[in-house]
Amino acid sequence: MAFKIKEGSEIAPYGATGNTFTSASVLSQAVLEHLATRFPDDVVNDTVKKPAADKAAADKAAAEINNSKS
Amino acid sequence: MKIKWSGLLFVSLMALTISMLTSCNPAIPFAVLLALSFVPMPKGVLSMAISATVVDIRGKAYEPIIEELLFENRTVADGLISFETDVKAETIFTENTTTVAMQAYTSGAPTASGTMGLVDVSVTPTKIMYYDTFDMNTLRSSRFKRDMKAGAWNTRSAEFDKVVLGSYAKAISYDMELKFWQGLTAATQTAIAALTPGAGQTAVGAAEQTWAAAQTAGLVDGVVAKMIYNNGALGKRVKRLGTTISASNIDAEYAKIYGDIPSAVLNAALGSPYFFAPYSHKQFINIFNTNATYRDKFSVSENKEKYFYNGIEIRFYPLPENCIIAALPAHIIWCTDTLNDINYLEVNKVANNQDNQFIKNVSTLAAHVVNQKYNVLYLG
Image (tube, rainbow over the protein chains, first blue to last red):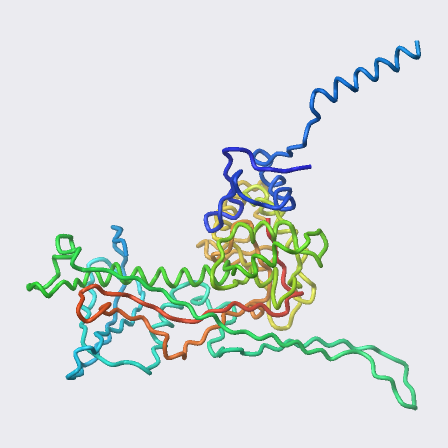
């Protein structure tokens, strides 16, 4: 899992006396994960998606298996 | 110093005038002491004008000036927490922890058991300064010219002194109070970020790391910082992971903190613990009570000055939002040395051949938290 602050979002978790976090803020994943619990609309879990080529190869392999069974 | 226009603040200035010392040395600095008392005054009451004279004031202690400033803020004015004014450099605070072990009687040589522990913590207040400069000549065409005396040399304005310099002193006082509660040094900020977070009491919380990351590093570690990390190690506070507090969930969140307070604290012979909360909670509590269906969960006095939760009073100070501390007030200590002879508020010329002036305050500050394992820190 890779949490990050959305582009354009500004988070002030401790009011005016604390700093505001943005997508440019350098924060640890533990901190981002905590911010996600408080600001679910501003912090997303940016999971890496598989490229389409991998899916195509997987579908082809599955089709071959089905053909061999039939 | 940028001159910003603002509304009048009603303060009274009590000016100390020191007789002029004549000297053949033209380089004697031009010094003025201001003792400021901040008593709200009714509209229309004029303050005393400040008269400035040449004086040599080195070596003299100016504690009344600093004490006036310190007691401007509620943390010190309330006198609730411990306020230690005799903290010199490297003052030792000693905490005693004792354990005993019952053992069977023996007529022979007994075996020692238990511990009598002593932990020393050295506290050295940080020496801090507030400094700014201003040029009264830039105000010659402003409202302040109304009380400037005739003559090209005369640019002093009593109204300026009362309003602007007075507000500067108030700002100093509030800023020191803010740093006392929320301050965080760069070293502590780095140390907290380097810890491995965890849910257990012996690990730093993700919320605590988030709070530290959200701070602009300064010169002093405040109470919150000292509870998270002090004496080179993770603090022994009772940790409670919080959330965003609002008028709807404030009761539930205070219930968690109340449940975390050690029984020894609730039943302490020394006195009762307090909730130390940010100012916004007063509004949340009032709104919560207004919306409550059957009864008020928070007890609030009729004049809205006293707030209680389950018999524990809530006091409002400049804490971070979504941060609450539950502790005996004796465990939170404001350390300073008001007897330091360089603690003074001075208004003076920048140089003898100039008309630019400066305003300067020098003092010392440290926050210290004792009996850490008995104090609850809630951070959202």
